[in-house]
Figure (cartoon, rainbow, N blue to C red):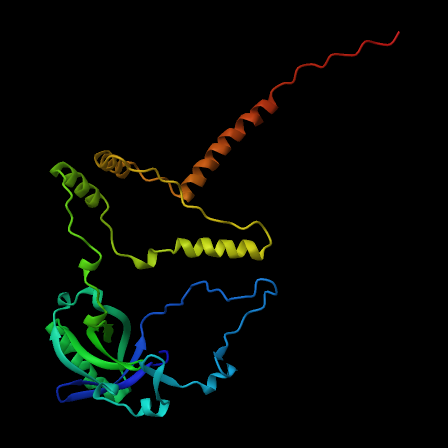
Length: 301
């Protein structure tokens, strides 16, 4: 059963439109450990309070939104006034055009959603748009109002629906030149060849399901040890020496990649068990050996 839609409206392609609904495709808090703020002495959970310089502590219900147009001068905008603001993309995802997926720089990608038809009546129109876009092998560019602002979005056909990704605006993107300077490094072809050899030996398949958050695991181990009342388990990263010579480091890296992988825990346990069994047979044999005769104590006179 599908979850709760975060937005409902219409998907529009020229004069063709159909009812659609939007679902978040990701969860930022799934599987994460979160902490509450406590007072260090009472260990009571603290509460956030709002404070006015003249009135002191105030209730959240008395708060309004204000836009600062000059220092310490605000214009108040009510919730009713905000609700009355509507543009076309408030209720309609109007497709502006189509681009190749490779044209969109990943730096613009923000949040991802799933776009589905809203009801059985919408399925036919939805399916036609979906299949036409799939055959064209294009990504649609459109707009939508989400969380109080209009967002540019990319809509990509997937099985049984669309993946809709909000895109950051150009104003949100910082130029690389603000952080990166022109490189003046010099290197030889032999270094480049060795680095290429390492890259080739580490070819992998993108498998995000295999990723495990080691920091989260270490954090969980710490929390569990505290709950159990034992000594806190603090994970420390291994010490790494400084690499002085790049060529030596490349050679050592290639040697490391050539080493056979370590046996799995199952194989290691099996091997250890075999050695233990073999070792256990020797004492049994020694026990079965004939014991030397005991010396008789001299008879009392």
